[in-house]
Image 1 (cartoon, rainbow, N blue to C red):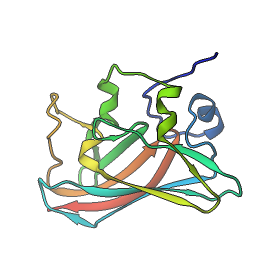
Image 2: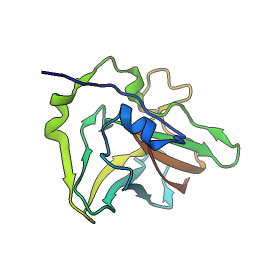
Image 3: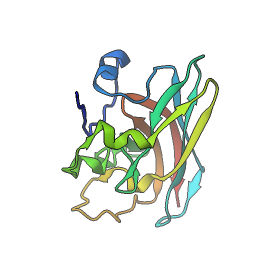
Length: 168
């Protein structure tokens, strides 16, 4: 029996999806669209609630996997830029980089979701729980300062749309 090991690796700025698809199993096709939605404004110190969405745009069933670990799904990363300073706000796109846990493929099987053609799946997240922010010093409760930001979420080799939001 052959066993695969799935690692916590977040890939950003992928130019060749098929190369990364060989490394990662999810989503099972490039045709699965990955987006997220958010409010335009948030209050400083409050959770930055967003919704992830996967949409199967193919004519075949496609598989995604949603397994929360450390408050957000495995394979999810976030890039956050302060528009005024053009500075990135995270040291790492995911706190999972600090984890020494590995999951075997069969341990994640129960978290797989099959999307039928044109079917979608949504999943709520708090943006401030995904990345390891700059100067965090293991303080996972650190908040983004007031300002205007853009964010992009990655799901393995898939990059979402980019959204702008304000923290007042």
